[in-house]
Image 1: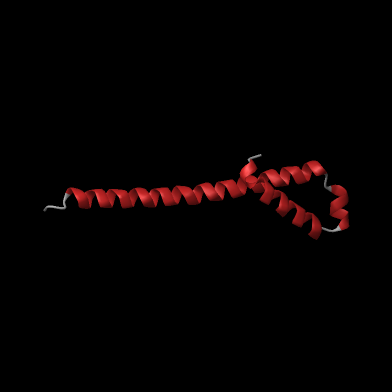
Image 2: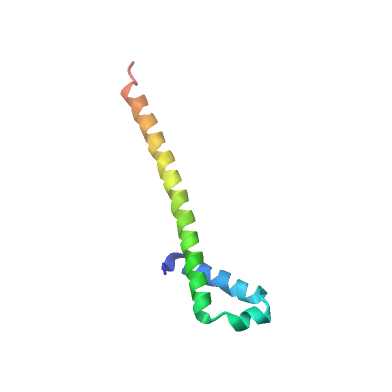
Amino acid sequence: MSTRYEKHAKQVVKGFKEVIDDEAKKVLTDENFEQLAILINSAITNSVLSAVEKVADDLEKSVRKIRRGAEHYDD
């Protein structure tokens, strides 16, 4: 599991454990909770990477616009 968001994922799982009923707690194992933390970590990572990719795309568009403006500055 990526350590970058691992702490947050574990906090979410801890919160989940607090809200599930006693019957669910009896059925779910530590391995199930570890798998849930991995899924949460993956979801966080994917969301962040998608946002970063969008910012990079927007920045790239801005750079191209600035470059075009600089190339035609004397026109």
